[in-house]
Amino acid sequence: MAGVLTVTVSSIGVYRRSLPLRRTLYATKAICSSVSSSKCYSRMGWNSLQRRSTVLPSRKLVIRAARIESEGVSLGFRAPDFELPEPLTGKTWKLDDFEPYPALLVMFICNHCPFVKHLKKDIVKISNFYMKKGLAVIAISSNSATTHPQDGPDFMAEDAKMFNYPFPYLYDESQDVARNFGAVCTPEFFLFKKDGRRPFELVYHGQFDDSRPSNNVRITGRDLCLAIDSVLSGQPVPSFQKPSVGCSIKWNPE
Image (cartoon, rainbow, N blue to C red; front, side):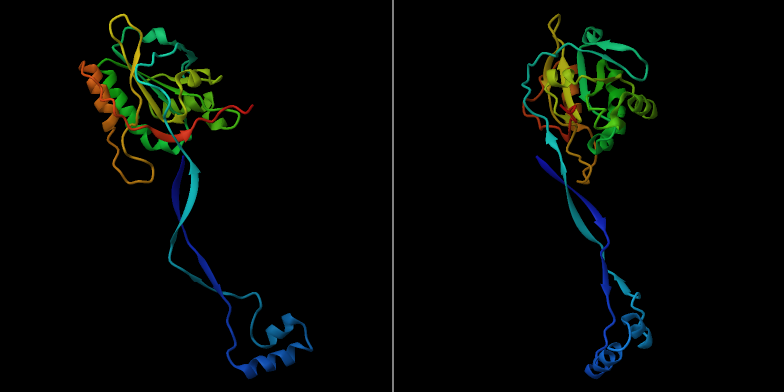
């Protein structure tokens, strides 16, 4: 799905000074027939390098940028096993580490994506709030460090430290975990719940809220928060869920 981002640029209009009188043009032609053009312009008091510029009002330039929606994973989907390193601490995390929790939020994010940057501070705020209520949260970056080195593990550790992530920020170098989850974009949110001894079951696969980097809608986290509230209170999560929208995951070149 193609999205549109806009930036504002200034157009510069360039106008040459004209000599309006026909006879003046004739005189100029006569003079220029015997001298070089540069001398001609100099003799007539007109520097050939001078231009009079007028700055026109700013206008919108539309730029196309690739974006994609989360899709293809059905509710009831069982959380796949994973074993991934956390670049900030060097610790390895597994799905089994979260067995004691009633619910698990898995977020696929990265460092450079403008859709993630737009929500990053609020993702941290909401995670802090719900982790105190018993929600387990992890973030995973599956972007190729070959094509996007700014999303590699060293930069992930810096990002986690800079934004004080309260959750593990894990590196999926092989990209197998993203494929097993069916993740296709950043950000993408998977909310799983536990029911006794049964495996984690997907109950929400949708957007954070309606806010996007360029639509001027206030960030609230409403959609994701409503789903988390329902899970933690034992209530059913509505089946109608708007897909998350973001940059496509950057797959390793073949």
